Length: 195
Image (cartoon, rainbow, N blue to C red; front, side, top):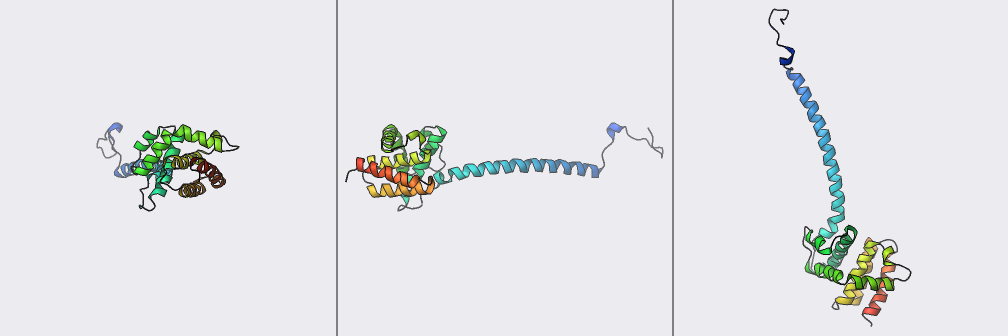
């Protein structure tokens, strides 16, 4: 084929798009890619922030020796809660931690796991009007930790165990958790550590 000026035109399959057409096509492709990429990034960030919110307490390092036992108890409750809701062995939950739990947290969690059936039986017996199956999972984890300290950590004063557990129940539990935990643990303390 020849053009009006007599020069031969290349076949249609060999026609190169103009530079501006190339730039526009490239810009459109980049925009579409950026929109998809941003959508993927937003989804990942949303998922990451939800996971981060769940794991943030369990992953926090202890701040000081004085506050260490409080944070250790708090972290123990979170680890036991995670084990329960994910139906994972506690050792698997411990091994998956980014920050290694301190020695008291680990001792406490492993002792709770070792005596889980006895602790659960004690809680069930003392929870008048409540079955263990109906208790909120977090409350049950908290009660197991506190009953474990009462039964197997005699160096921890009874009053400290009760006040720490009630404080954690008020912070993490339902509206009625503090009263329920206080009543049940008072009965547990009377049985496990008679005055």
